[in-house]
Image 1 (cartoon, rainbow, N blue to C red):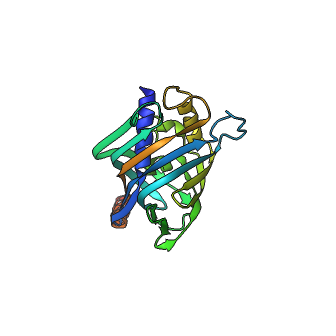
Image 2 (image 1 turned 90 degrees about the vertical axis):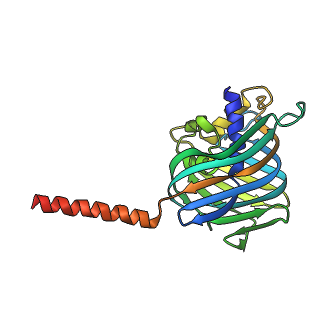
Image 3 (image 1 turned 120 degrees about the vertical axis):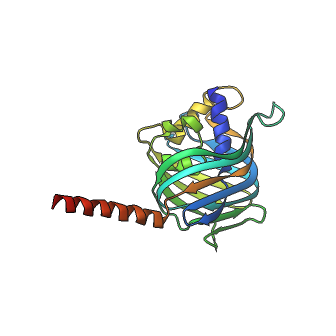
Length: 254
């Protein structure tokens, strides 16, 4: 049961795709892409001396993502869409499929980040054109909180995501001809980090993990993640309300 939940959650995570802002407080990212994935370097298997540094490589990519990401603030996250993961060539078809036809709630968290050079990122692997706020890019680097990143990616480990904790995640990534290479360095705090949960996945046995220090296969996603942050106007109203309450208290005290 745990193995199935984790696999479905990974599918949900890959549904973090494209972007469009409905208004100032809602960020909708949509993905319709697929290819091969490989995650390695997250465990001591094979002589890895630093499991908190690992690589995620997506290859043979087709399709596109349009990402709209707030740099900071409190967010509530939802997701919808389909994802399929094939991790065993010996079993016909994808072993794990997630299909969420309507929006479901993922949770609420605080986003903090540094190093982001934009808020709208468009990655088109059909034409190999990649932009940040309209300017061409070939990659980038940023640092953020692990728990918030889990929400931004569509709650990558589902109900087990709480084990990730609230450490920091530093990412350096490059975009190329059908390839997306993502190098990650984690600082664990109050949890195992993503690397610890990848190691758990790899140790479960079966088609998902065989204890070799690597998780790989094929994936295809078509879905979205919706992030909502408080509107500036709403926050101003809250401020006015608090100020009014303070004034009443002062008047009563007088």
